Amino acid sequence: MEDAEEFIARTQSAVEPLFGGIRSYLQILESARPPVLVGSYSCELEHKKAVEHWTRENADSIKASFKAQRAFMSERYALAVLCGSLLQVATMAIRLHSKNKLIPDEFHGIVNDSHAPFCIGRRVRDVPIGLVIIAGRNQYNHIEDAKLRKPSSVIFEWLATKHGYGLQIRDPAFDLQKNLTWNYAFNVTGLLGWRSYQDYEYDIRSMLGI
Image 1 (cartoon, rainbow, N blue to C red):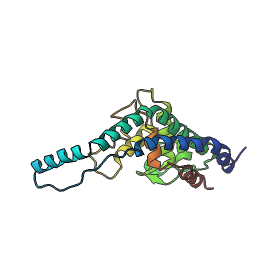
Image 2: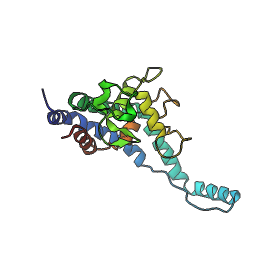
Image 3: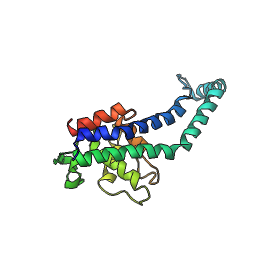
Image 4: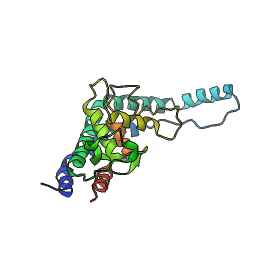
């Protein structure tokens, strides 16, 4: 049976093009960055006039930005396929090659022994990234289900609330209560910081102890 090192080598030719595709869609947005209004105003009327002036002065840039956003959104399903496929390969790497059997205390009752191999890696929003990966993969593969099951549902809840911005704010990028039919694979890979093959490989190697 292949080891983790060999798994990474044998899947590189499939994974690297995924990042090429992801970058090509991100470049749609980067091609027309929206202008930013910055200022300090003494009253609401002064602010209103400033916004009106800024809007007129930046009309072409604003129009180009909206056009780029529409073009990007029209490709969201293709982008989800690329990011979901990336999470699928990462899940397979962990499932096949993680030796971890320990479940952190705060995850007892949330994950069972079969998910222990995924309790590895650096943490984002208090969650080991191995669990973030499997949760993102499950949401991608079971988007048609009425409700995502544990532990993935709990992990998404943590991602939506343990962001440090205050208890009353739910991050819409991971809020399953807001939209059960949206595919969050792109958001998950973004949270992981996976926007290049090198970023991905570094985390896989770190999680698997290579």
